[in-house]
Image (cartoon, rainbow, N blue to C red; front, side, top):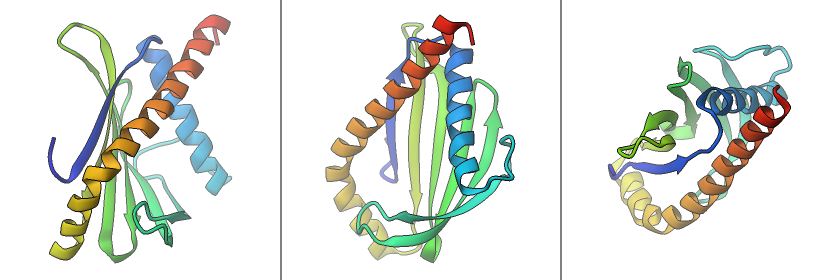
Length: 154
């Protein structure tokens, strides 16, 4: 693991196409909630919203932009926070060494000064526990939605 990147790997049970479709649908819902004009996701699509910073819980105007979409392989977006603090979120579909399908979620943090990095590294150690727990819940939720699609042949 790189020091500036938090990563969580989840072995999903749904077929890859349904898992990817579910991921895209949930991301589309999120983007539509912030901009009703958005009908489908594509690279370069942006929204602006108010989000709380993770560590200091401060409200900040944030822009989220889709930077990469490769169907059933990668969905990536960049969250641009004030002071050029950016987080690159990546959902990557892979096959592990045993042949099981995995969805790897990562957050790479880019900060603008050494003091910010020092603070990030200290808090990341503690934050990793909550990050893993939250990502497990989020990816299990996506997996369950995708499995529901299989059962209903949607």
